[in-house]
Image (cartoon, rainbow, N blue to C red; front, side, top):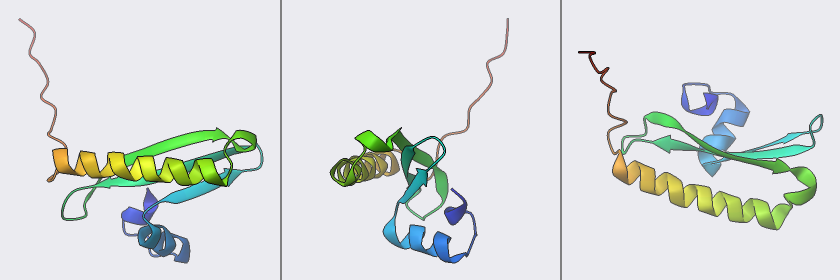
Length: 93
């Protein structure tokens, strides 16, 4: 999410303040909601995203999705407080 990588546009500031982003696509008639997964210090680990058809993703469903995404976000931050462990490649024998 660009809002958490140093971008200081008005939209990025709004996203950081709210803690989530909602994007509406008129072309595909979809809605996407995303939340960042951050370290305890605020470093970006990744993002959680849920998408759906706008005709089936009304305001009530969007609010519920935001709540569920934020719960998962908190759980992941608790599991990875300093970031994701680096992957180690396995050597072939």
